Image 1: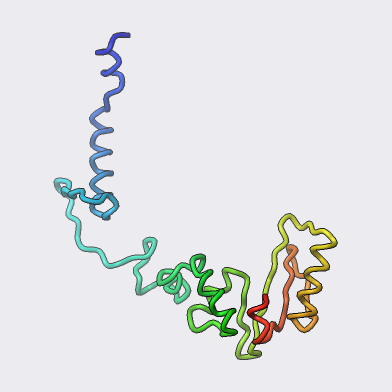
Image 2: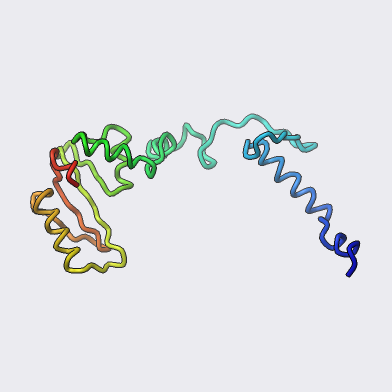
Length: 165
């Protein structure tokens, strides 16, 4: 096969070219391609769309989704540590976000935290089990519950113990 035949075999068809043109125009219109200009495709109007969150209008998403939109729960580890150091309970939206790390603030029933610890593969050594028992006796008023799917639940982590956990 010579170079001319090779180039002809590697060129795009007209349908592929149109698809790629539309695809890149969509990326540019969404702002995904910095510096790119979005050329409207002939015959297709693009009205200004209201802000959306994964396809849902922002004013229609749930409060939890709005909280995740404001601040990613998986990116708040530093905030969680700061709250623990100050023995400060989570406030407003952080009550929901802390749940992603296994911390559940159970107020107003009690001014305490509940911690869930998931055991990977449902397998523990005796040392790991003794460590969990030690945590329960020191920080959780001696209460630890084995839940379904190998989840240990420490109840009643009272203020003053949060910085130790």
